[in-house]
Image 1 (tube, rainbow, N blue to C red):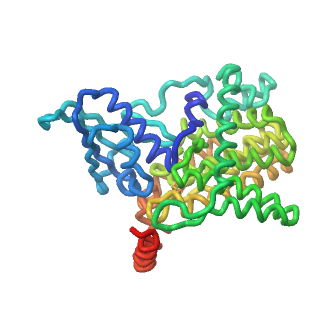
Image 2: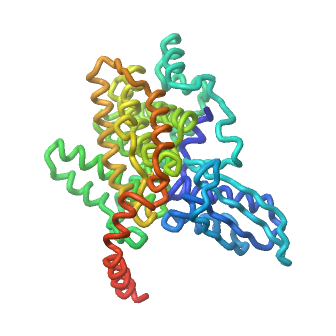
Image 3: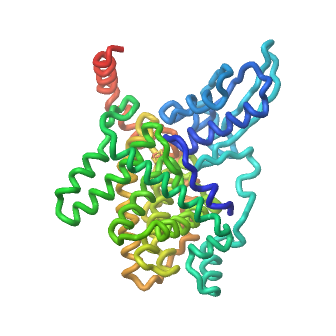
Length: 416
Ligand code: SF4
């Protein structure tokens, strides 16, 4: 299991696997082939199917800039190592092939050459069970275990991540209007925040939580800077839960950062032992893991012990098992944005449920991760970030004409 520094990344949305990862791969290939005159990039499988909505081509071209780039969309080819495959080719002015490399975007902005998916382990323990045993033996909370492994400078890193998360919330709450893309989806965060101000206490609390999650998810959809937690598409769950919990309990940032460490460990276990890639396991690996991370963090902040924290994380994922990835039009908007808000609410519920319980639970976090991975393998590729099934298919078939009309209307209105 790698450092949690590899999990939380501040960068531009809308997709860690379809934007951040491909851009990083493109930048690396450019650095290795500085003398090339032009590039050809093949985008395979899920990267081709949802790449236009997720701005994969824009990210790759930016990563190889200023050299000319030809993008080839290989919709029907899924490479065996991972559904997010891409091949880079470098050419000289005469058209001779100089170099070629196949790279995979494996989720959360990470890239792989197909062989190093689970290397560079810094953690001595491989799963939640052994971590809980170690923590019980040494009588330490989970966040202290993270400090023992990562070193004291992890707090400066997490303070930076928390600052970035809050900046995203602030930016998202300021903005109004339609998000980019054919859906013309309106930003709603600010409205939810305003409504909360005059609502009765319960509605106020929920509406505020929703507004924070929407603020992050809308910033992501607009290509703004977000933190992967664990991915861009699910970037609103952890920050919104932390921000609301901080406000309710009036915590100092130090407590929030410790909760961020625990959440990071929960996300890291998923990354190492299962997957956080929507193209590999559907949305259960993005929103489901984000919910598990946020539930663990909230449980810790509510005073839960290690057993209850692990229980909260387990529930956060268990009740998202089977969740498909079917973004309409390939945009990280429907169902993604609303899903962040609802997963944040579920994370708070899981934390409270775990606190109210005696902490005993039959299904462990390790087992639910294994189940998620198997469920992902059983899922048809139509439901794994290809926009070929589910809501994406329904919307495409049923609203084809309305879409055409709306696009014409808006283009006319904007004088295009
Ligand atoms: S449906 Fe879930 S996994 Fe798919 S793009 Fe949206 S947030 Fe990511």
